[in-house]
Image (tube, rainbow, N blue to C red; front, side):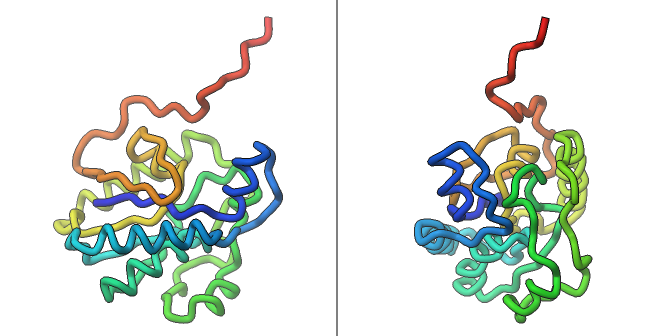
Length: 191
């Protein structure tokens, strides 16, 4: 399967510039993010994809939309592949709001509030990734799947950090990453 990180969002743009949380819940894509989504749709057109799974965050749905249009296949929205809840951008939009914005999507299985309400520990994201890996490994056609997700979830699946609009191949039948480094710079231990 292919794991695609969403295109640049308004949060990514401001956070990259300031290294401070800009306080933007469920941010949309920037113009660059929309271009990244279109570029991904073009690049992935020849991959033989027959299933698209996306996180319920707006930035992931906006990234999945051009691929779905180009390939003529629906997007399946699954909260399991959402981002690790740690910043304002990880506050999602309620199901009813998403249903108004995305009437073509089946969102009936989502809770109204489908994202966590407190910061999600690393081990919980890794457990979600392990669950998803096992579910995908059980499908005979997992190779035909595109998963539009986020930095933290892709890190938990692959052990790799990816930039906006980048993707990685992932074999869910293979071993999970041996080590996942969530923070490159740890504060020194207090004496």
